[in-house]
Image (cartoon, rainbow, N blue to C red; front, side, top):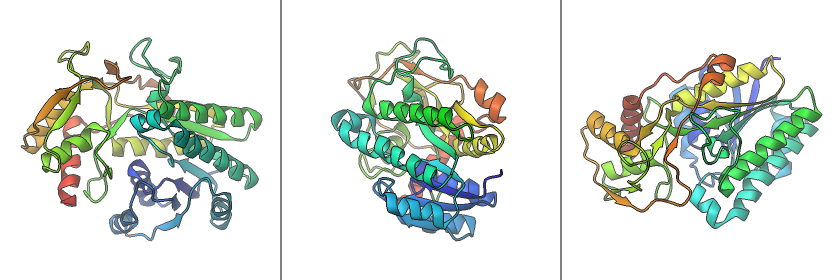
Length: 335
């Protein structure tokens, strides 16, 4: 059965909002469900401006059974995109309990409500952090999972829960999309990654230095086993990423059961190379300083993308230059 009415939990956030735009552009009816703990109501206005469509928004927490149940029933939801959750690795190490409550308990509650309303399709926002230290590279979906921090473990636990639900109900479909490093912004420059505090991720850190909101970029470690000593990661443009989500939704319309799929480019780029690319594309200088490594950071981290190509007929199309330009265009629009 084709998806018609889609619930997007955490849909006001970075990846959720970009997914909402693509779904709106393809004519789907969406309901955004978000507690606005790390996002802004302004995003709704921007989505409506870009799409020229009215966006249905419900303020709520996935831990609140009543409002979640009412939303799913009132809007006749048949498919869920589940983005709601906390996502900072360092914060999860300092305060794991809030990650267990928000990410794991929230997902348990969502699954209960889905079951009671007979909703059997979910696309889950997972993470490549479920793999942990690489036993080999590139990571494929058969690589053993061994998350090394509470954030990654929360994603892994939810993946396992979804697998158990699929095993118990042969009509249930779940795809766990394991993201690598999303960057960039929508071409309108109206939405993008806009963290409220000092950024945890590289690109918003770079853009905030570029606009002089921060004085210099901190590069964590320059003694890794990589060509220039800085960490190598698989950066993927957010619009490629969300187009992969829509392909995943199409896939589960005719394929039941559980599936994990990497979403990345299959290529690694170092922190210094990303900085140099940003400077070249945008003609902006980025002062930086090397600081000690963060606990748990590894040398190299990039994906094998065969499964996404074979199952979803999807691959990343946008390059590093587009990632850097769209990120800077979005940041300039905030100032």
